[in-house]
Length: 399
Image 1: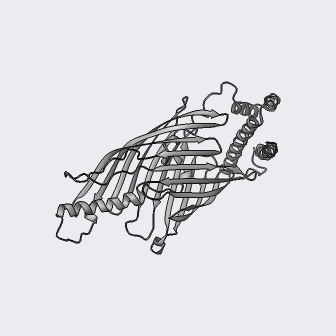
Image 2: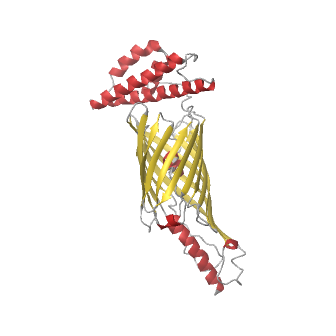
């Protein structure tokens, strides 16, 4: 009888954790979409290593704590991506640890958009630490002095349609719903992994020469619980400082801030969640910290071949003698292709401005100082951004 009681206690604890929050929450999912969708691997030109750390419901004893370290990036010459992650998710006496590897393949579907398909596989360990549980029957030490664990394989897959400005993704983690057996008994465990469904979408809209708005949405569903919706937006200044707000149904309102270094190598993000449920009486909120590094920008280092639109822009900007030839080629393009050219040119010019600012600051100057040797280059790039922006607006009005 005691053995059955012990099993029931452990399974009840695990059931509560799995059904309430089987997969961790992330308020900054839009900064590291790879942790919720394996198809994101290799969709950027660089590798990115990121650490996401979430401290949920500060003030509540044994509240969830989640830490995940991930890395993903592209192949240098092929349309494939690789990635991996390791995470720890602890809630009181129960914990979950996982290790995953990811493979993705992407292909072109239009002039400026692609589709990526990804799959991930790994192992999960669920653990219940009986030494942290106080039983009503104080004389029963079998559970209190033991640590029970279950290790199972796990797989997930995803798809994403994306461009430089927008993304729409679908992912299904834990689609093989393995059972979790904690005790060597003939009784089959009722605890098992639950399949989840994620749908994400976002888009960037330029509202001024230095500002963009990025709304985003994430729909999460893990049957049989009700779906949960995250939606919000952030304002981005010069592509390296942002602030935003997000609302999560049945849970919290979040504030987001972040900073990316001007050389585009390091990223820092912070989110604060204020609960809107009854737990707000006991919690001071949730803190989430993200630190990421971008490195090995291998695709941009590849030699240029052929005559793609991006290569025409790079040639036009690197050699002024080719500007006339470039302009003639530009005027022959369709409106959609012209917009792609202008967007790529805007991105290139802004990268140049950031690099010049960083160079000036390293010398203890501002880029507008007379003492800065590349002051004219900086001012010229600023003016080019403004004129390029006006040309994009004119082209939009003619669509």
